[in-house]
Structures are given as C-alpha cells and as structure tokens.
Length: 95
Image (tube, rainbow, N blue to C red; front, side):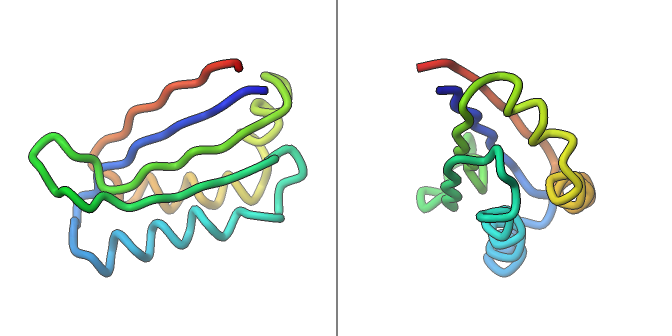
C-alpha cells in the first residue's frame, strides 16, 4: 500500500476559497480507478505554520500512483491547484 499526502497553502486563504479547493480535490473520488481512498481535510488551527488543506490518498503501489498522476481527472485538479496555491509539500510512503 502506498500513501500519498499533500499539504496545500493557498494564495487566497478565505474560508470560501479553501472550501472550494477542498471540494475540487474531493470530486476525484470514484473517478480514478487507481485511487483506492481519498481524504481531504481543512485546517482548523490557523497558525502561522499551518497549511490550509491536507489531501491523503492511498494506492496499491507506486505504479498506481504514477497512473493517477497522469489521469485526465487528476490533470484538471492540478490545473486548478496551480492557479490557487501559494505552496505545497508532499510525502509518499509504503505501509
């Protein structure tokens, strides 16, 4: 099992913009065969070090993650994220 976690800090950190972007991420559910599970959460602490959105996804293996990364649905999400993000960080690990 491969877990892919991405944290997003948005340019516009308004609650409406954060929720809109979180929904764009949630909308991938059920549309990408390789995506076994998805969880999207928004920050509730709002500290200086906080990111706005956390995305946690699970895949069978690294090949499935690679297929997800080029999937047309994910590519549309990437376009949206590129237009709204200030920064992001990610980690991928096997369990």
